[in-house]
Image (cartoon, rainbow, N blue to C red; front, side, top):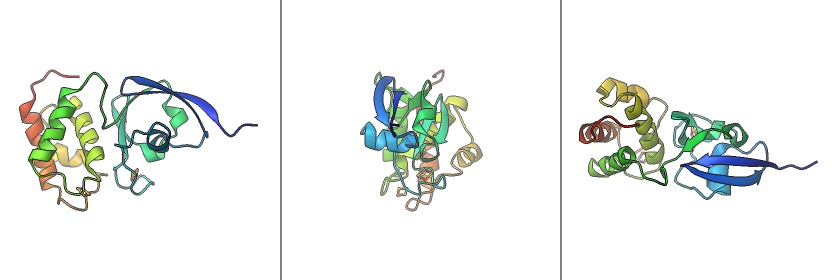
Length: 162
Ligand code: FES
Ligand code: FES
């Protein structure tokens, strides 16, 4: 009996094949198997949002998601699609411009969550932004600059987008 299984993962539009233990989380597979270290591990138990990625467009905590379960789905990380993503780019710029990044540890999860929000609500209200960020912890910024950054990105990009 082998302790590894073959998986095929579509991450940011690139297909990766790997042999991993079946209990390996998506977070571990991304960071340790595929060397995509933009996605962060903090609590490791679904409490902080640092590990957020998109699976078929929905934000999930990759520390709670088995890599084998992600097969056949489209995974997006903070590294972004190979062909580029103007909304993700703008969010990154707005986070930097608005001082929403201090230690930066929460930032990939926040940006990915915001990308998901803007896909559903291109012009979100402040309350909608706050609701989207429930489950994301930031120990540095006090959240105000993060909300401003998402508002700034929403104002600078024109719908329609994916
Ligand atoms: S590392 Fe996944 S929610 Fe904290
Ligand atoms: S910028 Fe440090 S945890 Fe958010």
